[in-house]
Amino acid sequence: MKAKEIDRQKDVQVIQLIRTNLLLRGAGKPGDPYRRVEQFWSDDGFLIAENDPIKEMKNEEKK
Image (cartoon, rainbow, N blue to C red; front, side, top):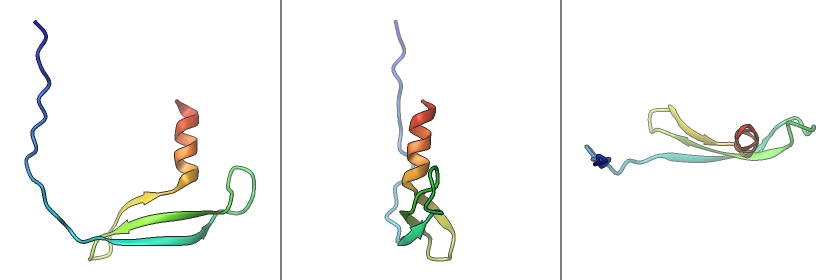
């Protein structure tokens, strides 16, 4: 008999983040086009996450 996977949530919190949209990143060349990048920061100035479309495209190419 196959064991069931169990996911248990230990803690859930609603937190405040700062979202920024960088208007321009990249060199405007093949492999490094101009693009918008979205970033999420904590209140005390730590970068939590970044959404860079070119990084996502490169990750898809590796699959």
